[in-house]
Length: 260
View 1 (cartoon, helix red, strand yellow):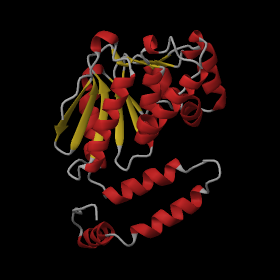
View 2 (cartoon, one colour):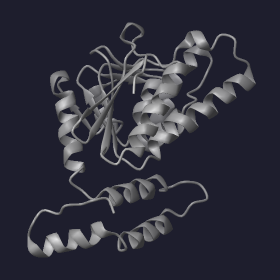
View 3 (cartoon, helix red, strand yellow):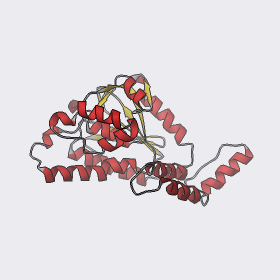
View 4 (cartoon, helix red, strand yellow):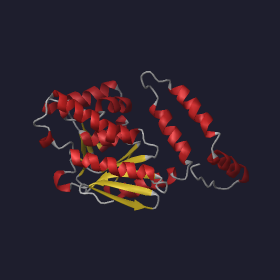
């Protein structure tokens, strides 16, 4: 599948999706979001793909925000539609996906770029990464889930501080705040992301998907996450992978999960 603004490539069972607008610091425009949706849809549907790593081209930026030039002529209705469509087709589409997704954050992750990273299930940052939500400097607020996911990750007080000051966090500060899972040297970023993903991909695919759904329901309004967990736990007992996992444990061998 050929794209203009992203590069999609395989490494074993790992699908790479690279935002490829390096001259624009990989800023997200509507066309790039459409391509992201297409690439994600294809990766979800391909049974040979176990997980996805999202990163940005070059070393300066993961994604340095949305393409502000597209905002100039929007009114309230247009802005609402932009946020709603983006949430559905990309950001929620990532967060609620059935396959593990790691953000490899290289350089700036600002605005929509940080929102993209936060939608992923795990974030690994290079030591040169800087992260923030600067929307209030434009008279806006985050519109792709930033107010919600940042609060879940770092807590209400820190989220409000970051959003209202528009200050950036260094990679070290982001790690301390719980915004990222790990910080590594720039040269080690993709190898570390691959290492972590390869470890995850030794686990049962259906159980991974069940874990994502259960964790996503934690604290969700109107949803009892404990009930989700109970249901997903029970469903696992009906899978071939559960039988294989138990058999492998009893036979003291590594399991060979099939995602069935």
